[in-house]
Image (tube, rainbow, N blue to C red; front, side):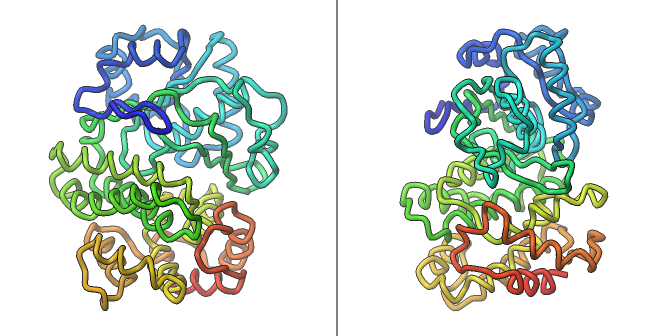
Length: 374
């Protein structure tokens, strides 16, 4: 086990220790937050049964692909009816972020939007926050060790909650739970982890420990992700990707950048149902080109990490890498309408990740990046 920001159980079969980890997290009556897909394939019953947990505990399985304010409020009702004292998240980043939102709402007064970091919410989230335990079934967001949650609100904004009190008390990272993930989702969630490692590394915030963790995550993912996509039952590759996802999130202490400043508002368009990892893969090359002029110290290290020469075009390499995984690499390919690009560029300047991009971007800069990605 690893203790860093939280305690992580990383191993094949780690799910079998669920009862033990619930006790350690101080949770006696959990609400389980997941999605219908996880339930339909039998992962929910498998995890509970093998983890020695009562199958009759309350379950919220309506987590949307991008967690919403409405879903958090609906899950909160189930939490209160069930007299719960904590939350288990089983699924990808959406389930984990939704669980964190429920944990805040269950213990604090006020609408969820009041806890968004852009509304000064970081200071409002306190140690009263209900404990959570995270069991990821994808290797991407790293939300199982992250202090943030991204939520789509009724007004169309996609905002982040951020607090050390949102970090799950325990994380169970079992590579076997990711083997059933389809190849395209494996690729897209993996590119999410890679974008985290790259953006945190080039962030101007000085945190050598987080930077070292980010580079290690990138080195692992660049080797393991193609293998996990082509050989889904390769448990070594799956374990390496779980490590990379976790490390990308551990490095969040340095902050993210323009990739996420753009992908967050794009993900806020609910009718488009855009996948966050796919968006990050598409946006990464144009953002890398934009940042290159101020990244003379960081890009050479990134190039060594992915195994290319110092004179190579890093943005072109990452575009080719994502393409080789089968990811569509144009916004138009995933049905993003051109007419929303101006609004996305405007909203990117308001996102909490905008401030830690290594090169300060304007609204017009963001629009140029979006046009390049379109």
